[in-house]
Amino acid sequence: MTSEERASFGSKLGMILATAGGAVGLGNVWRFPYMAGDNGGAAFIVVYLCCVLLLGIPCMLSEFIIGRHGAANTFRAYNKMSGGNAWKYVGLLGVVTGFLITGYYAVVSGWCLQYVYASLVGELKGNPQYVMDYFTTFSHNPVRPAIWTLVILFTAHFVIIHGVRGGIERASKLMMPTLFVLLLTIVVASCLLPGADKGVDFLLRPDFSKMTKSMFLGALGQSFYSLSIAMGCICTYASYFSRQTNLLKSALQISVIDTIVAILAGLMIFPAAFSVGVNPDSGPSLIFITLPNVFNQAFGGMPAVGWVVSLLFYLLLSVAALTSLMSLHEVSTSFFFEELHITRKKGAVIVTVSCGIIGVLCSLSLGSWDFLRIGGMDLFDLFDFVTGQIFLPLGGMLTCVFLGWFVPRKTVRDEFTSWGTVSGAFFGIYLFLLRFVCPLAILAIFLHQFGII
Ligand code: PHE
Image (cartoon, rainbow, N blue to C red; front, side):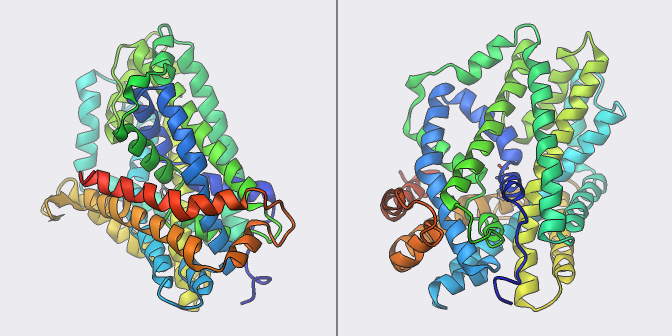
């Protein structure tokens, strides 16, 4: 298949929204706000922005360059860029990482759907202890979470089988504006609550005494996770970019959208939490245990508003999760259908079935099948650890080394400047960051998380 015949995004807007949709996910809502609040507020945000600018964007650009150059799935794209040598296995690592995350990301995405349903039928009302136990009862149930995992996986499947333009791009053009409207509505409702200013203060008050090594490395890790670096997603979507796409500008636009969503998520969560004197948490316990109670209490005097806000919030999460899940699904789908020379539909079936099995096993490992443990971790944590803590830094670092040191400079420059049609003014800076700064910074996060530095 030549690159002319291959699927591509139909419009610039569609391309930006789809790729930003892949990046904007649960990490923006459940991780960023907490990290910012707990690590120095505006001081963290400034450091985070520097990480995005100096490390996230160069890494995203590198995946853009490899993906668009290859005009194929991530494995084949690395293979083409490397001329068939062993670097192709870095591409394979990206595919494997994307594949392994798909199953467990679907489990969490499924929880979001359950909470949409529970908000809708009023199951999240009641005394605070009941609401807190609701999540444990639900996630330990052998059937319900597994069903929602499959429902969201099938939804992603349904979008993917309609192809790049008719599926991913069309769905993203609908879902991303919806996500923004939901986000802004909840931000307004949350910031209007009495005492909301304390939450805004928590998120934005700069505290420079928190600028420690851990905070820098935390910001760095968060920027990579949030931008979906080294998971195959960015590279796969870039393989559908046109030759006219300005890669640097696109990476900037996507990063700006991703960061705005993360900051707005903080302005949605903290004002409500602080207005009722609840200390925010991070991770699943924030959104599935703490927040339902916050919504109940904060809008206690206006139950109808509380009902709407809770419903809109979980819808927002589901939309954010689904667009990311689509990008993950597409990584493996494109791999299977191109490598096995089968149809897109068949490729998607392989992914949905296998990731469905992984997802259901991960879900069961949290509850009734808690004997499913490897190395002291349940399957869910294991997948999270292996992909996020090992494969992500490894893939990211190797990609920088590969593109920075091994690919001919002219090839990289040609892609960077879209064959001389856009400015190459920043190429020198990009190459410097790629060769020296990014690999060392990623190595630092890697060693830090194992307590080595
Ligand atoms: N970037 C996503 C988020 O912020 C997480 C993610 C990583 C999604 C990798 C897909 C692939 O939640």
